[in-house]
Image (tube, rainbow, N blue to C red; front, top):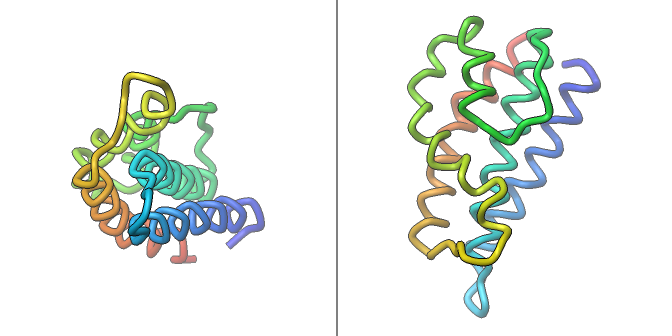
Amino acid sequence: MNELVREWVEKARSDYHTAEREISVEVNPNWDGVCFHCQQCIEKLLKALLQKSNTKFSKTHDLEELLRLILPAYPALSEIRDGLEWLTVFAVEIRYPGESALKEDAEKSCKITKECWAMIMPLIENE
């Protein structure tokens, strides 16, 4: 794995661990933070895969757009489209007043993130 791909993966892993820690908090959990870090994790994994496949991408938080770019190389990833659609809304909107995540949103975000991680990481690690 080249260095830039490795950096994307490490940043994704950090977001994943942050979400995992926060969802287990019993006093004052930050459900917004869980959802945000789940979205960030998968965004960074997709960017790692795009980097690995030498596919250019813009600075975007839109997971569906990143998926569209990577599907020609990895068509099996189409099965995570619905999950990516769910997570994308937590990239920006959740960080501003008027939007708040619930515990159920955080749990669903973590479940989707685990499923996406399981599909994307083997593609990144496959040399």
